[in-house]
Image 1 (cartoon, rainbow, N blue to C red):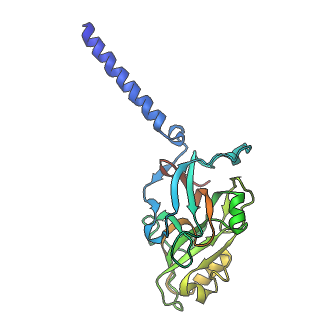
Image 2 (cartoon, helix red, strand yellow; image 1 turned 180 degrees about the vertical axis):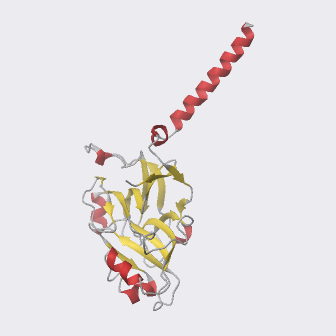
Image 3 (spheres, rainbow, N blue to C red; image 1 turned 90 degrees about the vertical axis):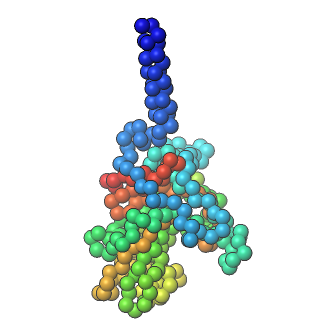
Length: 262
């Protein structure tokens, strides 16, 4: 009888230990129920990456030193997407790197315009004073949507739709939410940028760009969505809380969590 109870006790202790280990390994958002779900299709888009930049899910950053309060930690959970690119590390012209961390599955075929199109976009950024010294206040990461612009005048089925953020309002700490629909500028690559007038040389506001894409014919559709940097100046920092319409993508070391935007 004692031997049987002893075996049962050992089994129960083993189960308890496994539960404790699992709880310790789980991210805080999973324990509190703060996360709404997860998205498994995010990662480095290899064909859009140049050189050997870093675009990796990580914990933090926390700080910088002396910074306290909400600006001293990632806005969601305890992690973020860390990005590092160099300005002079390849044999190409220009020699700078490019990082692209995105999703080639979940947004495919979705509209750019209309009620179901792109109506809310933005993120939080960890910008540093060093990054400003490397390339000025607007040396920032971007959001890029590869799209089929479906413009009759452009005669192309491919363009990158890119948001260039304005300068971060703070450095050496986490920013608040940067709204891509009301701040910064947008441009289209290739012939789509030429015919709309929303090119890298002459970027547009978000409403103007959407108006330029609406030429009365077939509607533009999305191929992919990504956070990226390059090819221009060196930048080392982080992004979190990417919002695309009603979903916030919370970048954590354990993966990409999804949250409903309030």
